[in-house]
Amino acid sequence: VLVVKFLKRIFYRGEYFEADTPPLNPEVQRLYKEDRDQFAKIAAECARLSVEEQHTNPKDALLRLVPWSNEHEIIRSAQQAIMKQYPEEQQKDEFIGWFFNSLVPSLEGKTGKSPRRSSPRKSKKQDSAR
Image 1 (tube, helix red, strand yellow):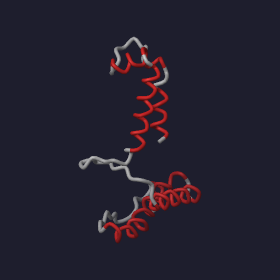
Image 2 (cartoon, helix red, strand yellow):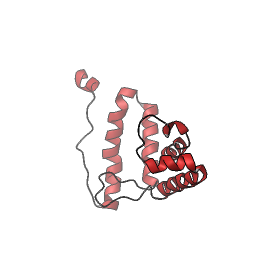
Image 3 (cartoon, one colour):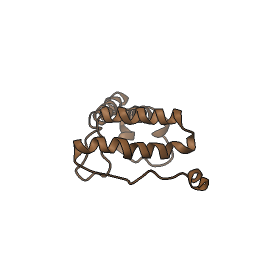
Image 4 (cartoon, helix red, strand yellow):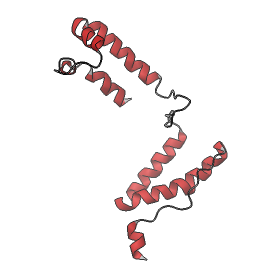
């Protein structure tokens, strides 16, 4: 949502429409220069539609955006706990281990999918300590 708001606001800045380079969309530039009220209405509508459709995914999309859910909260809480408990160089490995050893098994029953990983990666410190 913050990205959409930022994008909406940059269109109110004239420097993007009066540069020496030719505009990507001449009609938008014309509208900005000749009818600011109409331009503002269209920009607001585009931003509104982007927010409304932010979780609309094409069938073949490789990256799918989903609405915030309980699983997101669980992941965020675990990530914050790991960040407090472990030094920075160990956080990634701890999170990956938690994700595949704790979260994935709990979700498998819900989805029927099994994206397993055998074990978390060892950090360079762990390898050199052996």
